[in-house]
Image (tube, rainbow, N blue to C red; front, side, top):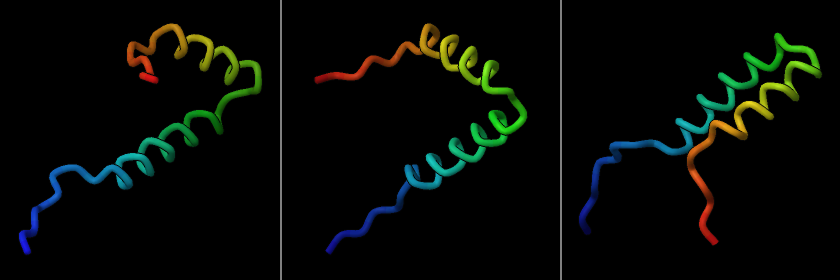
Length: 50
């Protein structure tokens, strides 16, 4: 059986990003959060494939 070394840990990355976002959003009002996501929606360049 061949074992490979992971170079990227997706779960760790996802948890880091979630923690970072939670920290940012905890300092914002509801209105600021809505504006943040509206702005992010227009900036996102990755499109999902069906």
